Each structure stands twice: as structure tokens, then as C-alpha cells.
Length: 212
Figure 1 (cartoon, rainbow, N blue to C red):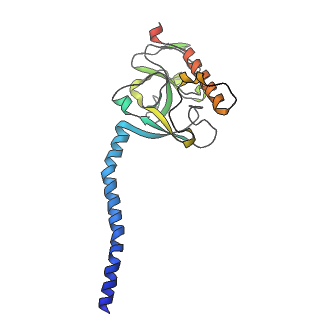
Figure 2: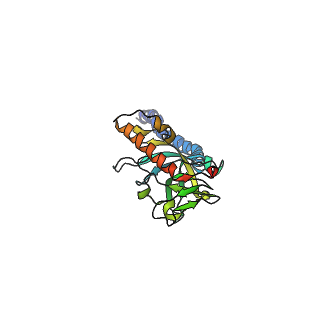
Figure 3: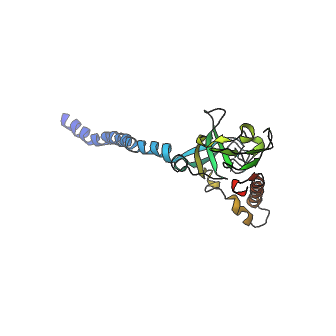
């Protein structure tokens, strides 16, 4: 009788050990890859959920509660210090360092900007080490038209592409190429033409320092 019980136990033992080994392997996998994920997020790329309507129609284009998730490049900013006009970036708010903003760079140091309300001055020259940032929907945005040029040191990352929703997965469409969109009444064509008009409007308000 005892012999039979021991035999049965020996047959069951491998199955009881397997979950333990599986759990252990998962733990070691997390321990192994965890630092890599942290380093990637800290110095190279990270994902951010975009809230609010200030970047419509580029981000969060519809009126639903669904929020865009985008991939952002930190390496380009912190190591290469590479950014340019029309880049969509994340930055710390100059009014509240605990708040992260997602905006578009409109002008670089030395550029002359024709401002929008509520900014007090009609025009401003962006000082050295600063940029002018705005939302694509500027009248629903807290941006440079409220607090003026922002220090470039506040920029944290540059947007690479939209990850979610999958229907819009990919790189943001370049405004300079939107004029090539064929005429038509499809929603995507209308959106592309509207974005190109926004791009031209933004450009008309900026005199680049090289054009002085």
C-alpha cells in the first residue's frame, strides 16, 4: 500500500514542480529584461498617452474618449539635441514642472513670430536657447501664446509615430507633402487638405531668422 502511494506521488511530482520552474523562469526573465526596458525608456524611447484636444486634428482627432498613444524619442533630444520646426515634442510646462505638455515647435531662436491672443505683444523674436511652441488647435491650447517662448532645456522628447489606435498607426504625415493630396471628398482627403492649410497658416506667422 505504501509502495503504491509513493509510486503515485513520484508520478505526480514532476507536474507540481513544473509550475514552480515556470514561475521562477518568469521572475528571472523580468530580472534579466527589466533593466533593459528601464534604460530604453529613460534614455532612448518611451510611450506616452496624449490627453486633451490641443493637438487636434493631428492627435486625438475625434471627439471620443479614446486617447492616442505615441512613441517618443528621448535620445534625439537629450543626446543629439536635435529638433526642428514642425516637430511634435513633449516638454515640461514652464508654469508647472509636474505637468507634461505635447506641442508643436513653431519657431526657433532668432525667428520672428506673429503671436495670437492672449499674448500681449503682436510680434516677438524668439531668444537664444528658446523655442516657440503651439498646439495644432491653438485656441484650445496652453502654449507660448500664453507664457511666451520656452527654454529648449524643457523639451524632453520628440514624437516618432502613433502606436494606437491601430487605424492610424504610423508616422505623422508631413505637412509639406500634404499639398500633393489629390482633390476629393473622402474624409482622409479633407483632413489632409485642412492640415495643409493649418501648416501654411503657421508658416505665414513665422519669419525665419535666415530670412531677415
